[in-house]
Length: 259
Image (cartoon, rainbow, N blue to C red; front, side):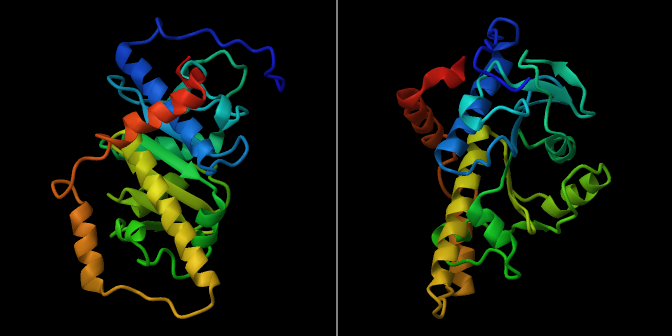
């Protein structure tokens, strides 16, 4: 199937648990937000959300949908082995590379509810720099530790999963060398805000480096202090303000992600 113009996805609202429906709405919202902020790449890349109360199941986009048309009911539920548990009725499957990357992280990191992977221009550019992400801005200083994973080609080999997990470690962000960015979070909002900050940090770094003049790197003690103040217990928890505001913004533009 390639023409979505006449596809009508039946609502799953009354066919899944309340907890799963909330996860679906948040996941669909995240797809719309990634597109709204220009971090999407046609129908490629993927965002996944663990299904609450169902061990080994997560939600991911139907491969062939643009991010702007993903809805709560169109998401596909799959297990850690790639089996479809609940098809959305789109006629599409899931991106195999998405399954390889996301299943590996969800299986290894039970603290993670959401995984986001992007191919933004800024993210790909920084991923190609030997220096990686530099602590040039406050956004960049949020990331005390960033994982780095060397490029091994399109992520379709299951044996790469162990190295993806190893390189991410306990971090919230990873730069996939010569590839793109990846973030995780205990909530969809945490993963999205982390990705937003990482994306902005990459954009700012490229803009500064393009000026072709000496960069002003802050004192390492200041970088460490700034990062410390971002840690849990030092500031309010992410999601208290950001997520409701982001959902309100989406609802003003197009609330169809909730369908």
